[in-house]
Length: 340
Image (cartoon, rainbow, N blue to C red; front, side):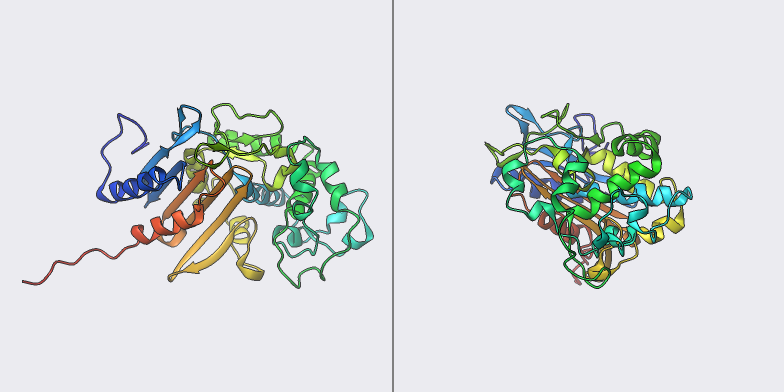
């Protein structure tokens, strides 16, 4: 991978500029992690910065917890099941969830995908942070919010809510007959060669994975990823995510009708596991991820064939801000010669 090791070819001027920017942020304690930038299908830079753990540097092979970047894989799994004729996104969720509260009967899978369900977000409860280090099950997560009424009529408002994607994980398991992690592995990760991507349950550490920090030198508390499940429990590398990005640019992962649904914005520009918006006149498909010890951002500019992936094992890193600055350099107008 260009820019990723001692035998890699020298960086382009743009790659050197991005590397100098990231090196500066790392030196000033504002970043540690790994970054990959690609344009026209070619990697501009892919490098690690700062430490994955004590005396262990981050590299492009380092596995990072993804936090909410997980949601795009959960959404893709639902679309794969739809592509295979096992469900449709307009099915009632109660067809797949038992027991199903009366309040949930109007809800469809689409409402969950687009955060328009009206469910309350269990991760916003005061009880979440004090218990986030304790292993749990998806069913136990559902019990935390099952008894609450909907906050609004389904489909009328957008409210980002991790509870939605927990239910989607259970629907994937019910329809496929396979555990959430196993379905993603057999449907996407193994066929695409994403060998460093998986579901981080409660092992405590990821093999070849980054330790979470609040700021460099100060390790964060531990979050057991089973408390996030299908809303935030995956880990990956910048290289594997670029492989995923390439698959989404073709029909390798999903057929075109499913991709079109995934990238069609609903309320507040949210599609299925991705946010779709216009930034400085360019269409951007992106998603952030934030949790204890982690800050991530994955941005795709499909019309420009550009990708920016920022994975930080540092809670207070401004991953989206870093990605936006890199985008400003990626799309900077070329310098014109000064007339003589």
